Image 1: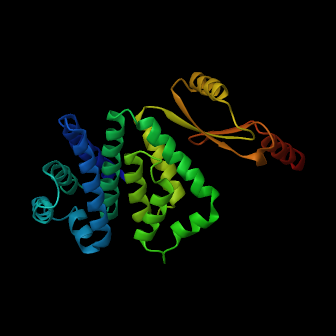
Image 2: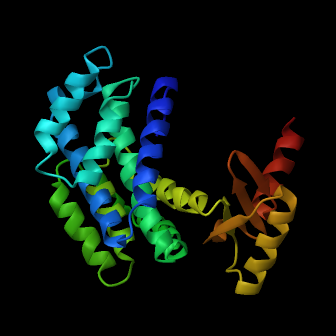
Length: 275
C-alpha cells in the first residue's frame, strides 16, 4: 500500500486509537472480532463507491462523516471497532481509496497483534510466506486466483481446501480477505507483503534468500546471525530453493541485493566482457 502524506497522518492517528483499544482489551478473541469487522467494512466500502466517497471526502463536515458511520454501523459492529472507524472517518485522507486501504491496514495490524499475543506470530509469518511460494510455483492456481470470471467465494473455497487444518486461524483470516478482496493487488505480492508485515511486527527485517540447494537449520542460523551482524538489527530469513542459480545464494533485503550465486557471477562477467 502507498499512502500520501495526509493519509499517512490519518493512518497514524487511527493506529494510535486502535492500539489504545488493544491495550485495554483483555479478551484475545475480541481482537479477532475487531479484525473481522474491519475487514467487513473494507468489503462494504469496496462495494459501495458512493459511501466510500462520502466517508473519504475530507472537505465535507467532519461531524457529518462521524454521524454517517455511526448511523450505518453502530448496530453492525462492536463498540471498539466503531471507535476505530470514527477515528478513521474524522481524519483527513488523501483520497477515499486510501481511507479504505487504511481500514484494511488496521484490520491486518490487529490480527497480527492477536497472533503475537498467542505467541504464534512466527508461525503466521512462515505460513504466509510459504503459501506465497506455493501460489507463485503453481501456474494453474495463480491463474484461477487472478481470473476475474471466477467468483470470490469460489476462490476462497479453493484456498481454504488447500489450507484446511494446516495453518493458524489468523493466517486463514488474512488469506481469506486477500483472496476475496485483492483490490487490485496480485495475490502473491499480497502474501509477501503480509509476511513482511508480520516480520516487522517482530521488529525484524526480512531477507528473501534464494539458494541453489536446501539449507540446513544450522546453515540458516549461521546466515541469519551473519546478516544480523552486518545490518546491526535482527534479520528474519525467508528461504526458497531455486536450482536455476546453479550454486550459491541470492539475498534481497529491502532494495539491496547480495548476489553470491554462480548464475549472478556469470551474468556479471558477461556484462563486464560486453562492456
